[in-house]
Length: 376
Figure 1: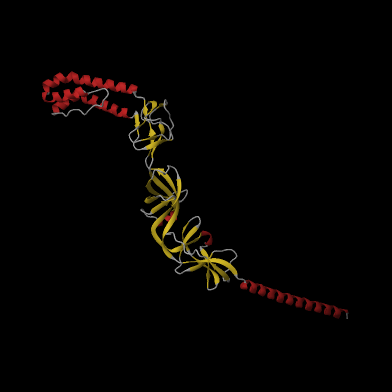
Figure 2: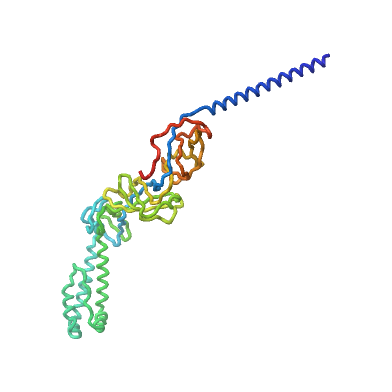
């Protein structure tokens, strides 16, 4: 009897447990279905905008480095004490083309050169008598040449020889040798004066008046004022969109044409350099100016806010009353926008990307600012 009671108790416990499990499963399923039904019926208000694929020029954002096109480092080629030129030899001092930037004291060198010229003149005097007898047709030319020799003036070219015999005569007397030695010294004398090759100003001066300088010593730099190279770095994947004569527009309204595109890629930055030239008195060497390059190449697409492009190159769109994702092709990205292509018909793009599910019903709020193009 006791055994029968135990079996009955176990049986009823099993029945109660089974009924409870069935009830819990039914209630859970009902709740899940109800929740799913509620989610599918929730309609979010989502801002959207309509975009249409348009043929437009590709535009790149760049940061342009302004570099003076007329630029040279000032190095000495002789020894001596540095002296001012027409103005003080200081950074930011402006000079006109042809004005003296600086001098190196040449008093001793000039004295030596004058001595050489005096010796040369004596050598000519010593042969005039022979010249008059052996080469009477040339005597007048050489006599006039002798009278023009001055310690303060450069030597003029030697008179032309009228015969080979005359040429050998002067060579044997060392006249030509002395002449070329003096011309060499006259050329070296020019190195004692540094002249402005164009309008510009001094920069990065490292020696001042009264300093003793030696050959190959850098004194500073001299740069032009209104001719500039504009240097830009772009991602290597964008190079195919660039052509020479594309337009560069700098912030502030200044424009230039792309002149050169480098064939080399910087290994550290994986960028390629572009070069343009521009003339403007208001630009400054070393400055960085934001700009854009409007390329001559076009693509069929449109511009969207960069944050609307997902990491898998998809965007959210509204179609047939529900949300979906589509794959697009990003062409060019700026800090705020992305040019996309890969679609042939107008799209209604969701401007909210969080909390959205595929196939979700939404209440679209249409934007008044729809199509955006770089051409505007």
